[in-house]
Length: 383
Ligand SMILES: *Cc1c(COP(=O)(O)O)cnc(C)c1O
Image (cartoon, rainbow, N blue to C red):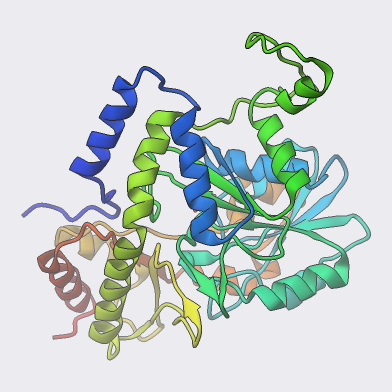
């Protein structure tokens, strides 16, 4: 019996053809296709600007830099995330301040965040865990109250919306998406920064490619010489290639149908597990569009097995599971640097003992979904 992989990219002949065309076009790095991808993505989320980068990590770094985060600053980050959300703050000489999460959604708990605000706090990086967007109005109000720059980590949240506001289009300084291999759409590696702030978009563009500013150049030179360029800052090398963007354009066109497939799988799981000793993932309420990047449920105390045994039993039945996330406060670097202990994060510290993510790729067949359902029921000794 073939093992069902935890995350399989939903890519095929259309992506392969687009990539092949890009390669054969004679221009393989950032160029016309990347610009087209940026334009199409900005239109899809309803943002004024979209800047393509080679990872969400790069995008978060650039967005924070452009938002003015620097040495000595503090940025609020949920402990329930991937280390990329926090490491980018350290890149700038600032410190992430880890915050516990909401027991239902496992996203940043705004009241816990409030208690961690100091006179050095400059920003907040909300993570739309699993693809369920946080309430943009609550976020904006919190940020306004404490005068914080919001850089949304939307690595899980494409496509998603809340109260009529598409993730990527809001009032935040910037929103950052991931096109990593396992994410809801992929370019192999890649990311996108969206914003309505023209100055921020421009700084991200300049810093994405070595601090080279062609607009400055246009202002000071009249010559059309293509070899001319000027450097205005020690920038980074974070641009997206046209080969990757070609794949992204095809994936973008399929994003809605892939999301619908994941939503259908989630609905099937919810129905099949309703009688089991598990806490189902937080549901999308009225007016919320969930991207369903992850189907992350928690085993209750009444479950006949613990999480590690559950994962083992699933593996034996040919289903690969994963765990999202091992909270950052349990990681050696963050724990030691900030002298953190599990009691400081009661919700996350409890959730990590019982959480498990099931396969939810849009590439799963109906048969595979039913195999996952049967394996979960069997592992939890339900019939
Ligand atoms: C995947 C992920 C990232 C990093 O994305 P990359 O494109 O691999 O850099 C950041 N934050 C979260 C929450 C993620 O899951």
